[in-house]
Image (cartoon, rainbow, N blue to C red; front, side, top):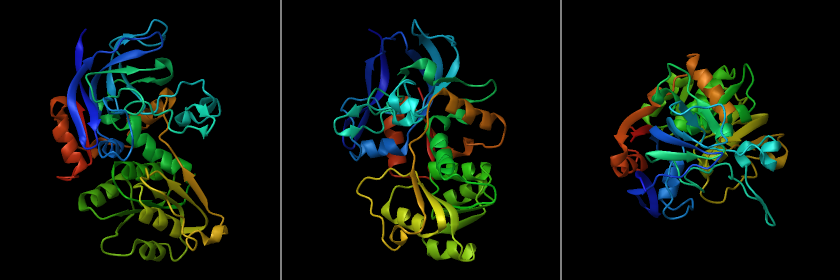
Length: 357
């Protein structure tokens, strides 16, 4: 049986390069030959044992590739076609999908609804840090890449761009809004770009790493607050003449950034939370105004499916957003362990790494 190289989770603090058989293709599946993928911050949570997955699972959920083989029932695609698939791969026919929440495509249990069911790659099924990837429900999830767009132009679409933009969308940003984005990692940078596209006229980015602060300005921030030098809550209140922001986006997943994002809201403002939290989250009584501030707290999991991917690639093709500068390092799949070490320790100004088999 033909084999392929893959990055697998062995145990906490060990993701290694190994081999597995190339997957067999079912009637509704598609087999992609991966041309470019990347490492996500969520993969680091997996590496550290902060998010549980099965041992031996192939990691990764951001694929760009070529259709190698189509299932017998798949229509509308052709072998040799360049495509992407979202990190979230909804079936299209579950209760969650039919309610319009494709990312929550889980299974109901006697204990309630199971979240994150739509996130399958590198979570519940083998993922994209491999030479080949099996895509389930291909007709719901494969999105053809428009002619003229490179792998690195669309590499952020499956997760980072979709997640960051969803932070702006969930915040329901309107023309003329003032928005604060806490943390300018790849997702926060895309949230900054998304806020600008949605019509925010004042965007305040909160960050302390110089390279990321500069990138925030490039992605659309009007002000950048260095939280290592100044209290971000006081500075945002100063910048808004004490009004507060219409929308704050939390893109890190820490208690302190969540609290700060809550405290800078104007009355009736919206906190859009994108962070993945590793422990219990506490809502401070004073920051929440004892529940009387008319605030909205929205949480979002990266939207997926082919229509979402099409829309993101259309935004890229239009020239209104360019995420290529987020790719700061490049590795071959053979050096995936070295790439993980760099990314996990955030060395050398890394934002995102491109992995090519």
